[in-house]
Length: 314
Image (cartoon, rainbow, N blue to C red; front, side):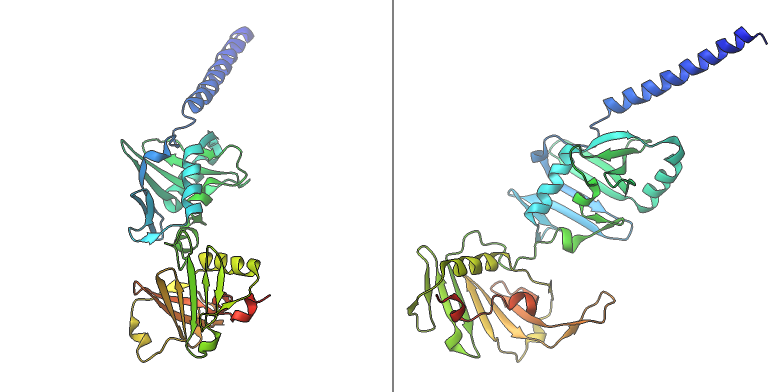
């Protein structure tokens, strides 16, 4: 075969490769935002499911998001998720060498995402983070080619915003709002009753601030200490919930904490073992609120609330 013909063949092959490369890049640019949703206000439902049987259903009711139709969601968690959904962008296609491995991982360990808007449903699978931990492998439901997807300007990987850790949905730590008084926007008054030692009971009235002892007498106070206590009440969390109130049978409350019109009764409880394969014991309190919700509260968390009136004095 003449050399000039060989060169001609090589030129044609090289030209085809350049064309394919440029066409793929062009296609990627055109598909850059196939995963994102610009108008996140149109989203009303988000469903997620991992390969371990964990499912998350997030729905909007009257502009308030609920987890699995009954639990309150952390505001920062849903805001981070909606922000990520809006800003998702394709960084590049998966390389040919990694394609088989990535597709297998998506099929066996990927987390399915379904996002429902007023007019459409977007569905995709989120796989492992990339080695630099700045992107994830993702596959759109009606596509055959996976992509490396990132959030421009964000140093982490997108799956963290979805509450995904190691291919599993972390429901409790990521989504569940475990604030005890999560429906209270403004605190007008607080009352702590110590049933075992009533003289330690006190009340706080806001606007203007007053500190009252168990006789309802006004006491001098440190304003900063009062404000810190109010902020603590707003953000105090329970550890978990339980269903049967038979455990409270024949038990008398040791404290009663009233915030505005919501009252939480606290009961003593022996140490219990953690259930996550740890043998450590934790001191807990049992509690029951106005809505008859039963909660377990860790003592070391709630001891900051169960203080005496002396700690507010100047």
